[in-house]
Image (cartoon, rainbow, N blue to C red; front, side, top):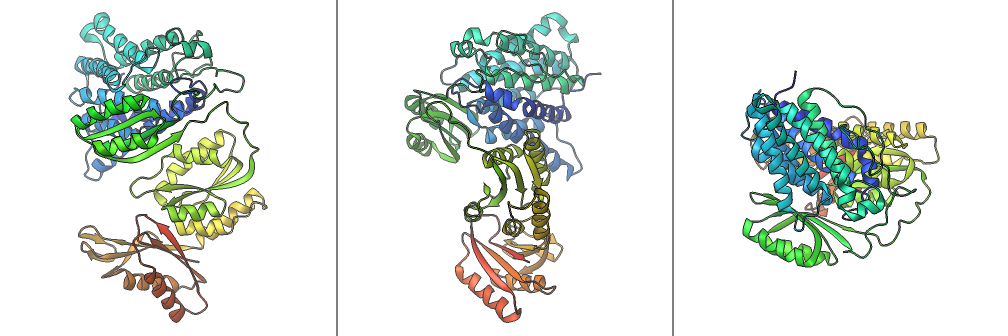
Length: 556
């Protein structure tokens, strides 16, 4: 029996699509020759969809707390918004617009019968049209062509089956139409024909549509087979291909703009229209997606500063990412290091401290936890046979586990050290010894983290109930091992109370990590307090930079 087109189907679609793109990521990266041969289309699509899937899960979690379920409009809206704010690269930005176009139609769709099928047909057509509108200079033989063919095939089901068609049939027809169009892309775009590959972005869309068909039909398609352009592109949830050249890489972007610039932008429609014109004069591969005051801007330029300045004049740009395209063929990869550490760190200060100790930091900002794809990228950048992964946050346990599993599938031996705070990560990093065996190092780092109690001080944003009683907005909260145990009037006195509680069971070393706006005098006062009240306890102080908590405390 086919499944209804509802919020649960959207959730399933996200999960299946993420699995499909995870399987095909490397192969899609390998055939990435247009618009820039920088080998990251599969990765960008995966990270974009991962952001979309996280937004859908957040929508379900939000409704679960109220004992309800999101409706179709809430689910597809969350998926589109998550893709918009997490879009990576040219391909991810176009994917975000495709999902936005679908959401605009599906938000008002019925969940079953011919009404749902008709809505899905219209959604696929709107998605293709929206993607064309977002690209400054559309090119055939790309994901745009594949999206249009999928919409055409979906509409053909109306002529073939009429009102008897189900949404699952429409999705399967769209997938098959996309597969056929993908097979033809090397004949439409010369650079693909010369490399002997199909379009990488279109390959990702085939995976996405295959997952949609699977989610609605309940039938999982067969595993893909490797093909070159001109061969039988697999009619499966994924799309595997043979890379262009013995080393799996095409020449990178030679002779084109030097930088890729991406940012989110808060601006009105008129300002964005003027921004499009300005960026179009500055560079190429311009894609601007979004609406309702929030946009994702992508462009390739030689003057990255000018592209950012244009965004500042149009509105408020943020999450700015600038990537330099390397010139010439890729250099030979250096030899793998025996072992490395990858650590998630809140704030530039802690990240720098981590880097100075030889680890690869993943810097995060409040409210923006890293996706598993970002952790996998950091593991790859560490370029080691063995990696110790420190998530430093209990909320990242599942994300880090997924990243470790994917890295292991790529041949990297990964140990997930169960660190729940940055101070536990620092303690684990302090005992890291590459000269030890992998298992001995893992045990030592895990033991050091486990022997470190952690606390943080935060400021309450509103009145609420806590384990320590009722707090008011502006109160200072002292959390030990994740639970509120102290409510105080100011940072210094609350921190002293927290320290006394933590040291009541003993301790040898106190670690203080100061937030960006915390004065150094606070650390001096806390050091003096520890020295006077707790004998034979040392204190070390680090500048953490901007992070969620004004003060982190560790006791070993």
